[in-house]
Amino acid sequence: MVAHFLGCGRSSVYTWLKLQREAPAELAAKPCPGRPPGLNADQLGQLEELLLEGAKVHGWRTQLWTATRVAEVIRRHFGISYHPEHVRKIVKFRLHWTSQKPQKKAREREEAVIDH
Image (cartoon, rainbow, N blue to C red; front, side, top):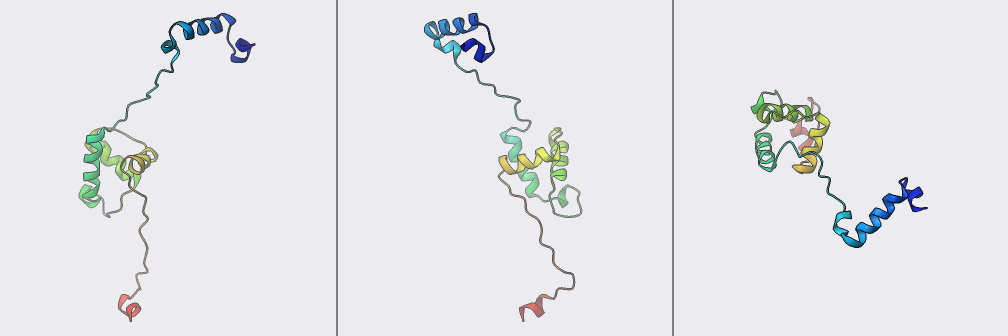
């Protein structure tokens, strides 16, 4: 019944029971680390320094960092190509930066009149 539930043969279940009695460590879950990160901790620190310099220093007309621009900086400086969506995750979860949208102000806005 257990073998049917697990979708395996009865002999497999008996083998697992024997292993459990004789060598429990053999049945322990094996870590599955996955693919190593492309940027290591030192490179992340360097990336943050590059981003703090501002986007204009790296050739863009505005200081606004977009995921596409950050991906280009990573490609230029570290030779690693990332999709912009993945760059968003790197910036958010590994650098702990938040997305910020610049506030737009009307060109006709007169601060002196508003303050008065």
